[in-house]
Amino acid sequence: MGVDPAPARLTVGIVSAGRVGSALGVALERAGHVVFGAAAISDASVHRARTRLPDSQILPVEQIAARSELLLLAVPDAELAGLVNGLAAARVVRPGTIVVHTSGANGVGVLAPLTDQGALGLAIHPVMTFTGHDEDIARLANACFGITAADEVGYAIGQALVIEMGGEPVRVPEEQRTLYHAALAHGANHLVTVIVDAVAALRTALAGPGLLGQPVVDEQPGGLSERLLAPLVSAALDNALRRGAGALTGPVARGDVDAVVAHLSALEAVDERLAAAYRAMSLRTAELAKTNPALLDLLAKEGH
Image 1: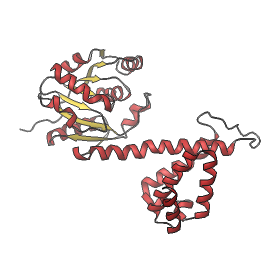
Image 2: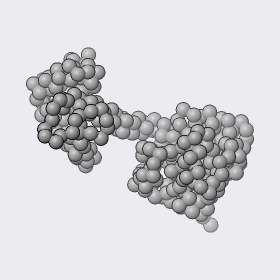
Image 3: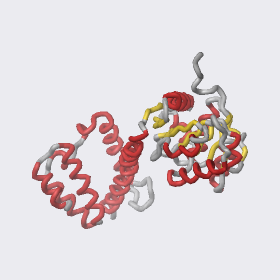
């Protein structure tokens, strides 16, 4: 007789009711599990717990841990090891408890103090940025979740939980967890940096009198600079995901040395740090595009 890898109805406790924990709590409740309680300290976490999980109690961490069949640890990466060690020292997690953390940077090794006491440890990381607003919950339905487990039983349980929450499970080996997280951070976080820098440069370029009826360029988000960039970067992102390096266009990909030199001069006049970032990204772009060797040489020399 086979073992059901995902019990139909689990008693779930959450530490803590931050942006990620509260969103996953809603998804687990919609899947038929019972979120009985959440730990919440800050005013924002208490508010999220009461609004997103109104049937749950706000309880101390040790009470949450002691009563959970599924214990969800949704704390910042840097706090996870300390929380796990504290729970293990208190010996409040019952043997057989499924302990899931949501940290992208960590695999299951960080849960060893609890798995040594008989818990089943899982790393289930939603590959999504969370704002704390209602769209977080809707986005989970289209998100991938990176799963790391110690054995096939663990992977089966993790896969079942993710599917129940409406996500797509992806297996990430323990030894590749750091590379996985670095790749996600590079793609998502640095994209934001590039866009913020591009917007700042556009604000300088567009300052002054505009066309009749054109709004004044200011420092407020969502303005003319952002509207100028939005369709361009949206198309570029879509093309990159569909076509890879074949989506590269523009002066660097074409190997236009004069245009790139002019860009660097204009950017340096605004902010040397912005010019340095443009130069570094241009070098990597030129390498991917296998472009004009003269441009590659120029960028490589200027970068040192």
